[in-house]
Image (cartoon, rainbow, N blue to C red):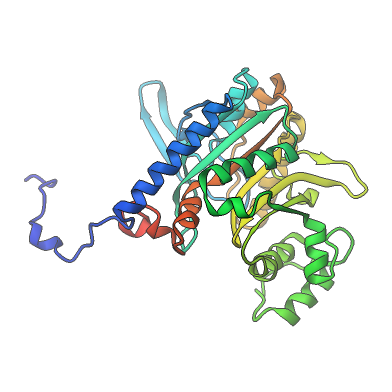
Length: 339
């Protein structure tokens, strides 16, 4: 019996096989792709292509990777491979090998992320600029988005505000000096509900809660870079000594939508290894499995990463904003609900 026989067509009459994006939307995606490639070609930034599968996964507790197993020649036992949550680690290996300025429009994958602005498979535009400061990269992002989006020219240059000043302006609280109790009290007074599981001894979950439920909804129209994050939120960014110490990280919001995340890239292999260990400790404390750090990335950093800044932009969100739609399903050919 052939278990792979195709079922009768009538049995699938109720299934919606159609893409979420219209033909005009697909043309818009193609137009934006062509424009960004022309932008980087004019500036001498090389387009690269890196693997979707890797031996390493991000240890960030806020991100979950998809895992699979390779069985075949070269592996006496099954080898665990991870769908990449970003092309970052491979691109940094290219930078350490002397690639110079590079960019990539890549598929990325994050487990457990689906909704109005999230899909487990999505497109990232990521690029790295040796010799650029975060401020210089922010200026280049302004130029790119002005080349891609007609409306962005009205926002250029994007407003810039520090993370600390943003909190002070909107809450009166200082993330560098005020205690967790003050943020908990503000959340209880201002938000409709507060998760009962947030810890009493860790400020970052409270900062994230207020950022997503109080600060971001008040951004309104326009473009704004938020820069200089708390050191505890440095991720893969350098930390600038204080006082106060700040992570050299920025994010771009466009019309209230988080669009880009950039760093002055950390090049210290020992510090990166310590952060991987700390990430895994937080994962275990949250009941998540520990993940093996990417040893090849650490070896590349030890060899020498050029002083550079890098950024990732959610391309599907960019299309969504360009088209004036409010759900990723309309900007994607096939979102999770349609695969």
